[in-house]
Image (cartoon, rainbow, N blue to C red):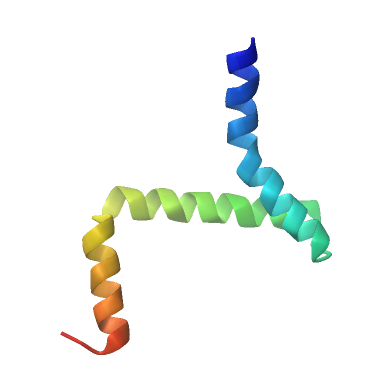
Length: 67
């Protein structure tokens, strides 16, 4: 039972963090939840489609104006 509770809390902690920041900024729970879902979906797409190191390196070089 303890492992299950910890797993559930571990999964909920990012959502709770977003909701806490949202409430501190006066954002409703619905908007904070939608923002969290958007971040999760975007993160999953990036993880699935991009080699993280090469992607970050490429973005950094483009930002710095290098080729």
